[in-house]
Length: 228
Ligand SMILES: C[S@@+](CC[C@H](N)C(=O)[O-])C[C@H]1O[C@@H](n2cnc3c(N)ncnc32)[C@H](O)[C@@H]1O
Image 1 (cartoon, protein in one colour):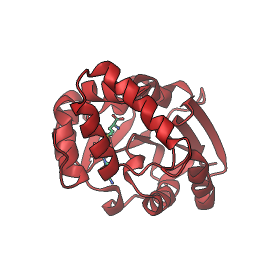
Image 2 (spheres, helix red, strand yellow):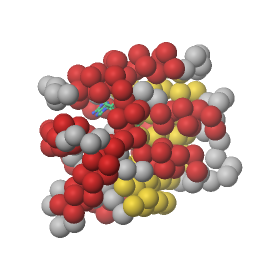
Image 3 (tube, helix red, strand yellow):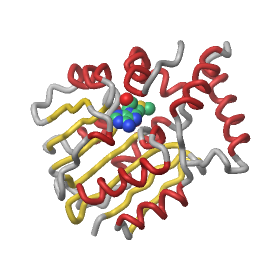
């Protein structure tokens, strides 16, 4: 597999065997997906849900099972990924939007739950700060922003060890090295992870005050940010 020119075309290609690739390339993928529904306050019952970077709908699917009556907006830069979602979900209360996050006009006080599974790491630090601001404004009071991702800065002294552990995981699933080589090319071209501590500062700067963070394995993390 060769990497493509931009995120949208990269994920158009990645969409072909996406779930299989994610399970075998991303440690704790299943746990990080189920985190979106496992740690919610018991009375939380969102009416409107925005999925940022829905991909083929694995996060959406898990949330949809818990909140089948909610209205969903699925946003992704990749049209192929959105096509997979449209085939997968027959629910009429789902709206599909092909857009980059940075081009999307987030409505004010419009969503109860904004979810982002493995999509924020495609945004650089400044872009994250900008999107966090838009997310805070777009949430209704009482709303939750929930995110699962790899959260480590490349300058972190543990980063080389993380890459080694990641490699061991991927090679346990793919005996030849070509998938790992592609993954690292993808990682170096398209992935811009930031540490949780930095993201927490940026989330506080835009107005979030309460958080819940669940480290599945130190840097593979899930967090919730509450808009009171
Ligand atoms: C690794 S996939 C994650 C998909 C799904 N949420 C999951 O957890 O499996 C990242 C998705 O985010 C989308 N994406 C990445 N950066 C984006 C951006 N800046 N704007 C819109 N979509 C983006 C990609 O097209 C891709 O479908």
